[in-house]
Image (cartoon, rainbow, N blue to C red):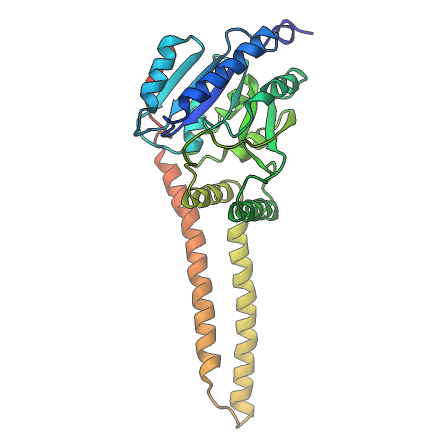
Length: 322
């Protein structure tokens, strides 16, 4: 056993926040209690800390984070200049702590992801796992619509050949080695669930039960979930483009056959009666397919265009890491 393995690891909890003033005090208290208990048990270093990332909140979230930092050396924080989105806020926190920890655990501010299983993450890490995914045991707390869309999302990703852990969000542990590897990716359209598995290294899984939200409402609207799914698809596969190509080949073949049929009927039979349906329906069908194809291609082209600009993925306005 090396000296690194023998000593208790320095843990950084990364907590992205957006307009969480209603629950942030409770979140801080419970996470600090979790760190204290784990440190007293010798599971983690006594210097382990929490890094709150304010993703451009418009309420008192940053005011609270500043007060937490001033009153406790277990709390640190960074503030982004505007709302860049959950994935980039999480990435900002992970890249900020990578040089100041042995491993990190990312967790949502609402603490629906049970913080009491964090020691299990650390145990898996100490056994050699660089990436430990927190997986919910079931979706009993979700509504019917959310369960349906979640299942559809995972099935679609599987069909497209994208490897992600089923029922895993962004509750995970990353070792310093995994964090350093993650820093090598510079794309703007971030899909962390896919990237962390693309990295490789040793992996493990920890299961947890989802709890009720402490206060407030989820910030993940249907529009944001749809955008998230599109980012996941376009970041890791060109399968939709290939589907368009296959559809194009199929309809080209069908058009050739139909053209031959029309010509044969025109020159060798005298009972040809021009039909409205046979004219209008193919126009609508092919028109719809063309618009769909243009939309899919446009999505890829648009994302490629954004990547070529090489703009900063996020901008840090304030940093309380002193």
